[in-house]
Every structure is written in structure tokens, then in C-alpha cells.
Length: 378
Image (tube, rainbow, N blue to C red; front, side):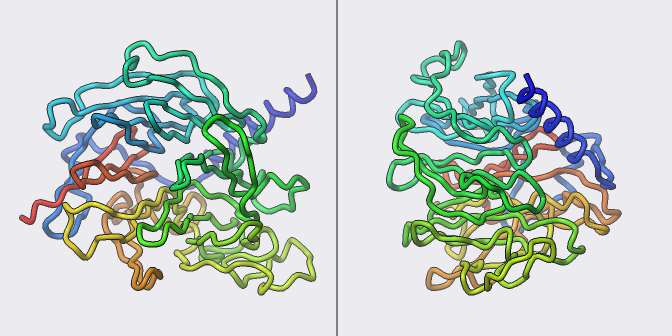
């Protein structure tokens, strides 16, 4: 009972933290009004692909254009489909309810995998049973139960293993258990669980580079070191046991003032790209399609969820990290406008998903919608 009470109190504190913010949220009168305020590059169009998806976060593509949608505190998992290919999802299914922050979704060989805070489950033969989902089968339930940074991103890697991460149970601390601040992987049946890397404060997005199969992941820097410090990160995992610095160093070379240590920055892997502080980079996808112009091929789209406690808000955009010779060299805005000129928040992008036709879907957990980006050339 004591442990359950402790978990309950942590959930309450975490919820209070999430809403301890000076942000001003605005609700557009219509989606058409919202779309007019969002800015896309010339030749691209933006539309609302699906709505009525409260807390929509991570996205996974199934067969036949079915898209699975994980959520946050709402506790639901959805499936949507544009069955007549008119650019608007006309089918919506509730796959699961009352889960604990089921952010992570992944699909493979007819099975949906869902990651909650402390466990991963699978839903077999899901496409044949969207209207009457099967009971989940838990494949792994030994992840920590801390809701602070408890979102689990979930993807299958090129090695057909499931990848996820365990964030720090705090803003800044030195966790005693090795499982915290880690990147992990396991077999699809839940076996052969292994820790790949540590020192990662909070990653809720990663992808494998098309040319190299190297894993790149976003990481959210700590709070309360000022508006512009430390930078949020894009990292590249190379070797088993790699350490990315948390809690000793941030953004590669910023020693944490609250964690006394004799360690040196050179002992840790530095980020390969630094985002502005507190923009909260989450979902990240390399573009593999052919619909967009050639300069977008193999470039990385990153959803910047937006700051929650910066004195002047920042983020709330889709960024494009440009690569040359497999290395990130520049960052530019691809879509913005979710933060208006008066610093009112109109939406918060979370994840990016490439569709079979080469268009992109973008989830927005504030409005509970999914946008679609297409290149028309007009």
C-alpha cells in the first residue's frame, strides 16, 4: 500500500508540474482559421487529416494506410484510416482505453505494440479486429513506474528489435538504478532486454538514418538554468554502453551546477546537433519518400513541442535538420505558426510520420488533431 501511495503522489505532483506554466493557450474558431495561421514552404499544402483524437502523440503506420495513434494522460490508443484517399481520415477506432500514458506505438507483421510508463503490450491480428480489439498480451513489465519523463517512444529498428527509452525521474538528479536515463531494446516477444546507452535525460523521438542505419535521437535538456541554457540535443548512438552526459554535463560541455563530480566532458558523447534551449524536440523522422522535392530526401524532420516555462515561449514548430555527408550541418523552420505573434499557443506538434505516398502526418496533442503535409508544386 505504501508503494501504491507513493506512485499516486508522484502522479499528482507530475500533473501539477505539467500545468505549472505561464503559457497562454488559444483555441481557433475553426481548423480553417488555424491552417491559415500556419506557415509552410512554397509549393506545400497543409490540412487537417483527422480530429477528435484527444492528446494525440506518437504515430505508427500499419498496413493499408491504417495509422495508430498513442496518447498521453488521456490513456487511449486510436486507429484511423483514410479509406477513400480523399485526404481526410474517415474511419476512427478506439483500440484501448484507461492505459497509463500510452505514448509509444509500433506496428509489425499484423501486430500493434503499445508502450505505457512501465510496460509494453501487443495486440495481435489488429487489422482484422479494429472494431473489436483483442485483449493485450504484456510482453515486458519491468520498466520503472515513475510518470515524470515516463513517456515511452517505441519503434522497431532495422534489426527487427523494439527500441524505447527510460527518462530521468526528475529535472536533475543522479538516479541510483541503471535503467534510468537509458536507451534500451528488446525482442518482439519481450526477451533479451538490454541497455544500449545511458546519460539521456528524456528522449521521446528517434529514427535510423537511411544511408547508414545509425540511430539519431532527440533529448530534452534540464530546466532552471535560464532561458537559453542548456541546448536541447540531437544525438547519435554508436556503441554499446555509450554515455551522453546526464546528469553531469548538458549539451556536451555545460557542467551541471547541482551535481558535483570530478568527471570531464570528454568522458561523454557530445550531441551532433544543438537545438535552442527548451524548444522540446520530440518526434524525429528522416524523409525517405519521393513526393517532396529532392533537397528533402534523407533529411530529418523534428517536431518541436515548445517550451513550457521559458519567459518568452519558443519552439512550437516542425524543424528540418539538414544533413550533408551523413552529418547534420544546418537547421531551418519547415512549419511554424503554432505560436502566434502575441505568444499565444495554437497547437503543440509531437510526432511526424511519413505515409506511403510520401506525404507527412504531424500529431498535435493540444488540439487532438493530425495534420497532413503534401507537396503540390503550386
